[in-house]
Length: 194
Ligand code: 2AM
Image (cartoon, rainbow, N blue to C red; front, side):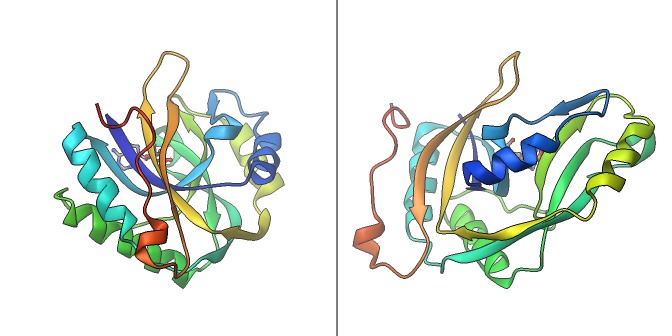
């Protein structure tokens, strides 16, 4: 299975973002309920590895925090533009959580992520040049600011590639705060372990 760890966004925020998602030809917009902020992409693992990752994530002890979504930016430029995304206001608590998730995933035996963490919520992906409409979109919504959004947990998702786009499934949710470890421990979602 293909796994990643992310912050899920409240439905109200997903809907607000999704309402913006139009008017740029060639944009492949992310479906509202797929909008999320990735903390760590893991990729393909087997069931035993997935269990180890789950066990390690259950031990992550980090405080709940508020998140602000701020502004728009892209990965790649011009003809090489690949993604349009919403950024995140400076957030030490988010950085702490990401660091702990990274350590947990490594403790579970996965290789380290080499790329620097750049928190973002992908709105659209591009296979061909978006043309001038993207500039207009960024002009219209570049000052976007949504928040504070309370982040009280994080999620282990599986992702299945399908012709209609990726299907994300929540496999486990991990509370943030300072609960004793035994209160934070729950089994994996049914079906993750074979
Ligand atoms: P993205 O939003 O920047 O595309 C599920 O696919 C999540 O994992 C997405 O948020 C995606 O980030 C991220 N992701 C997918 N493939 C990845 C890869 N090869 N390396 C890092 N992150 C990846």
